[in-house]
Image (cartoon, rainbow, N blue to C red; front, side):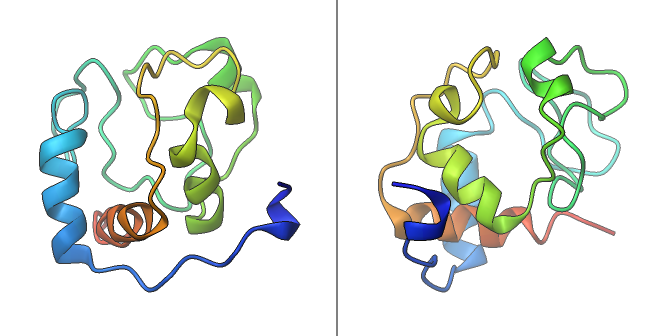
Length: 114
C-alpha cells in the first residue's frame, strides 16, 4: 500500500496516547523538554522536526540521511512498521498495527512542544 492509498488516520485522543506512550515507548524514549535521551532519543518536539537532528543523540546513518520530516502522516506510516519505513534504523520496535492506537500516540506526541 502506498502512502497515497492509505486511509487517513482517525481522530486521535492525546490522553489515550499518553497511556500508550507510557506503556510502549517510555522504556526507550523520554518526552519532556530537556530530559535525557534513553536508548532512543527524547521525543519532545518531534512532530515537525527533521529526522536525525536531535542534539546529543547518536542516530543511525539511515535516520540521519533519510531527510524525513516527522509529520503526523509520516509518523503513521513509520509507527506501523519502523524497519520497513526506514531500513537500517536502530529502533527495534516491531510496530503498531492498530490505526487508532497510532492516531492516539501521534495526538499525544503533538502535545510535546513548547
